Amino acid sequence: LVKKSQIATVSGFSKASLISKFNLTSDDILVLPNGIYFENSFSDKKTSAQSPYILAVGSHSPRKGLGQLIKAFSKAELPNVNLYIVGSCSHHFADIEKLNNDRVKWLENINDETLCSLYKGCELVVQPSLYEGFGLPILEGLFFKKRVLANDLAVFRELFGNSIDYTNTLDIELFSRDLSDAYNANNDTCKSIPEHLSFDNSANKLIQNINN
Image: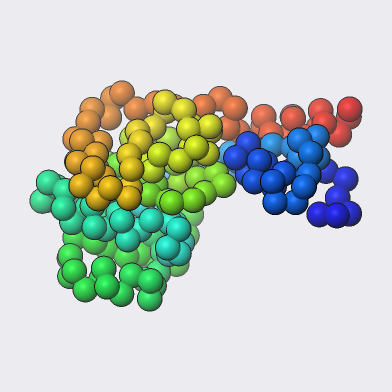
């Protein structure tokens, strides 16, 4: 970072964190949000997942909040619904896995085609992270016109605004109720991806910055 001419990051939240940690200025950092990279052909494949289901996508580190999600899901009034978590089981979740909830399904090493089919077939996407710099699964869920429930983080408010629903994942009782409410909500009211979240916009911003 000392030798940089300029740094790019994916959100204003990440930019503020970099400024604070590395004693940088605002002019040192350019915010270039992520976009969707899925090919349209990927979404044509049907999933073999057992419907109906809720989908969560993310690595299995504690900051991803999957432990809170499983606890909330186990308490939620969703008796006939499965929860699919994309990623391998981890030692971090040994105690939670002992709950023996056979409606929690762990999926490992899936490709983009299968991931797209999972998004397309789900009823709800959940992003329970305790800390994020962006939140790509939210963007992917919105791409497939799915309702998204996320932990109420500043970075999610910044990027997605009122396009998604929010909860407090550290309050398991509240999270559980919000999970049920979001699942049972009318998906016809789901929002689209905010216009600023695209690779085209980020590329144009980068080119403009280079030219200036």
